[in-house]
Image (cartoon, rainbow, N blue to C red; front, side):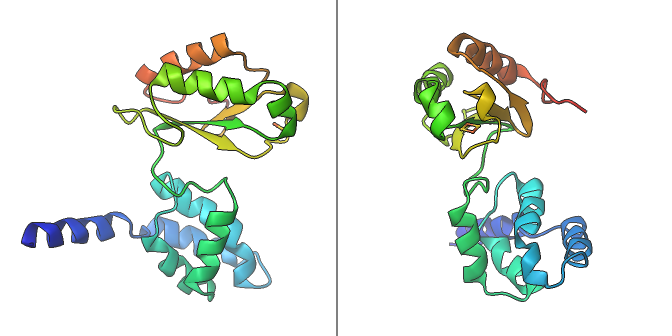
Length: 179
Ligand code: FES
């Protein structure tokens, strides 16, 4: 029981907004006429801290924005750009909207999952890589496309995805990062 409580305590501390995150949100809110309008970028800041948006800090964020926790939950569950579960150090987000779908994104996703040996949204055992679907990345002319964290890759074919996944398995930093 004590061990269980310790774990819960550690978990809730783990998912507390850091001072830096809180400060960044405070500065962000100043740019908006009403604090609730800042919810989308504020959630990106929260996601940048944890890699996803855990349930615990939603109440903290709601309080900062003067809205209900349910409002935050609705936004997080509506938009696929917010991860509701932990993701890999390198998160491969494959677009499955219409242009990418017509150019083979479904097959690409299945191919990638098979190569990685995971299911959709599941993190590889070493914590390095996860694959998710994402809505249109606004690069429809270069379908099918994906992002590795925030970096775009265009016209991705299965063989190229193999190379990307193999590279990410041993990478320390995002090899596709463009400053
Ligand atoms: S449909 Fe994939 S980028 Fe638009």
